[in-house]
Length: 110
Image (cartoon, rainbow, N blue to C red; front, top):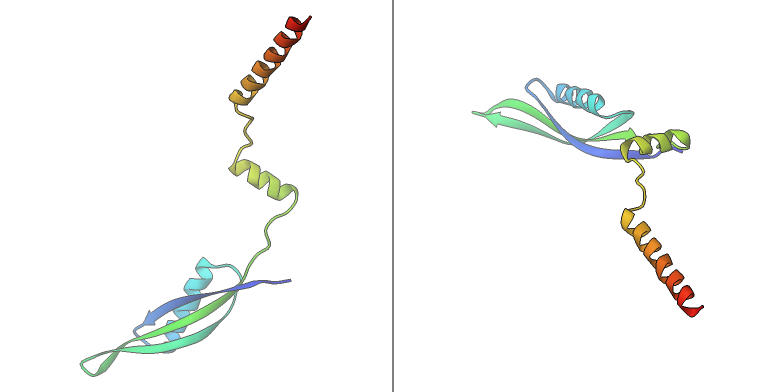
């Protein structure tokens, strides 16, 4: 089963809408894995003195999410990131103090 995610990006070019789309897809592909397609949501032009100076597109890029590692690979990856720690010494000290109290009571009763 595949699960996809969609992210919105904006790209701009001084040449054309097609060039803005091409640059946006190239940049998305350099950052994201498994890019599958894009939907052009908006097209805009920048105008200065009555002339078009830039082409901008807002697009929704779709990419497929990868499966998380499972089994030994996941455990070793988790173990490297967060080492397992032992129980705090306070708990062990509290347990031994509790044992001493019960042994004193037992000897007093005799």
